[in-house]
Image 1 (cartoon, rainbow, N blue to C red):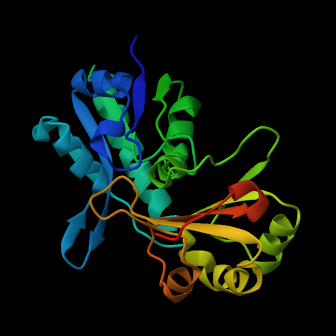
Image 2 (image 1 turned 135 degrees about the horizontal axis):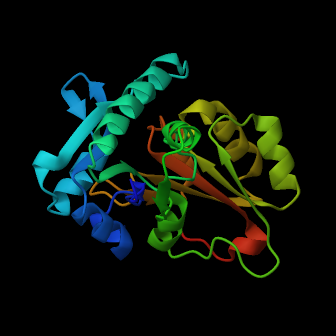
Amino acid sequence: MNHPIYFVSLGPGDPELITLKGIKTLQKADIIYCPATRGKQGIISRATDILKALEVDESLIHPFILPMSKERTDALNAYNELFLDAQAEYLKGKQIVIVAEGDAGFYSSIQYIYDKFEEAGIPVDRIAGIPAFIAAGALAGIHIVKQEEQINVIPGTASFDELSAKIEKGMIIVIMKLPGCQEAIHTCIRQYADKAVFHYFENVGTGKEYYTTDTDVIHSKDFPYFSLLIIQPRQYAGESHPK
């Protein structure tokens, strides 16, 4: 086959934040695979919601179920099944697209299947997207980093000691998917509310997006999966007004 399998980044949730190149790639697809989870109310897929909002032909959309667990065996099995299915369709000459929220190369578990196609000698092409923390900065109207400032983007597995060390060094910190380090963040807020501004976000790019810098509110939060935090030292953040 001359054409590759495309990995299209959908952006953080707002359908208008997909790139023009991403839309054009979707329009050429014969099959579009998108991640989904199984919840109490059935199958849930933010990726599918984005595709429908973009008026993609629903008959082309093929959700695949990804178990949400820290134990990754079931998820890896799901990716292996997807690989085999997509490979079979690709060998039939179909134009295959696999989508991911945010950017497909930034904290995206879609890397597992991307690597499997490369190992199988099947060409792949990844279309870049906007990661959630960039959209969050635009939502809040903040400059995340300026001039010689340094930024550290980390997953939501950090300990209080790790976060404390970064704050003490004056780094800007972005923490993705917060539930795994909720207590560490709450402790940081208690200790560093006078030294840093905590920009808290939920569901960026969706109708449920939420933003606040009110540390009392953040401290009382039970963080959802789609949450992130940008921590800026006060000397970098300038004046900050809780929202």
